[in-house]
Length: 115
Length: 113
Image 1 (cartoon, helix red, strand yellow):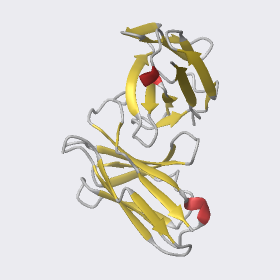
Image 2 (cartoon, one colour):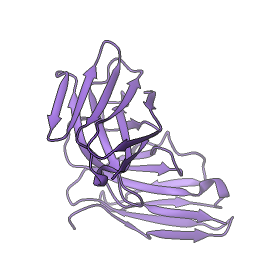
Image 3 (cartoon, chains in turn orange, purple):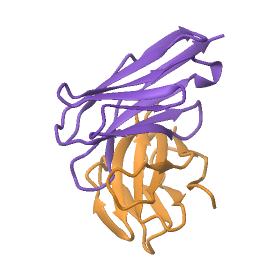
Image 4 (tube, one colour):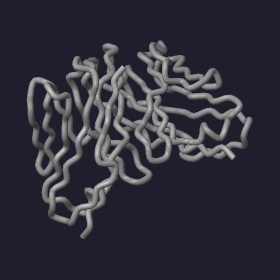
């Protein structure tokens, strides 16, 4: 596709349920990021992949959060035993260039609401 | 890591007036500063960026200035139009050798027709 695609667009989960959020980056983009955006805030870094390797997961808020990108393209962010504080928009972004000053291309995000 | 502060949090201007949003950063090694625009319910999109080897960059009605000594950079929008209404985020790179950036908290710009 022409841009980064995320699904589902909206997800409502009951507290304690597991959820899986999908990101389909721009074809050929090596770098992939997950960000969490709370209401009225800027995106906060969660994790970073270079191809299939997860090189930085320092932003994951707890061990309930897990991300993978097994074949170096599609990525999945999984949240186990969801809590109300997990409610946010989860943004995926990919980067085309290899230089560190290449811009992020964001998807439309998944809005997660935990009830 | 990088710490980015952004001001103001909200800004209302009359159509045709200018808008200025300011950000400061903490890591003196940072040398790339993008600005993203996020319309309600939509994805953040890059509108302009600046590298540290220049002090100012313009693209039509938008410009960004950078003061590396003071560690601050600003977004300037001239002749504002209603379609400029959105949330604007500044960002600065995290010194990790790849494209990770830290975002500011955002400025909600409202252009009043």
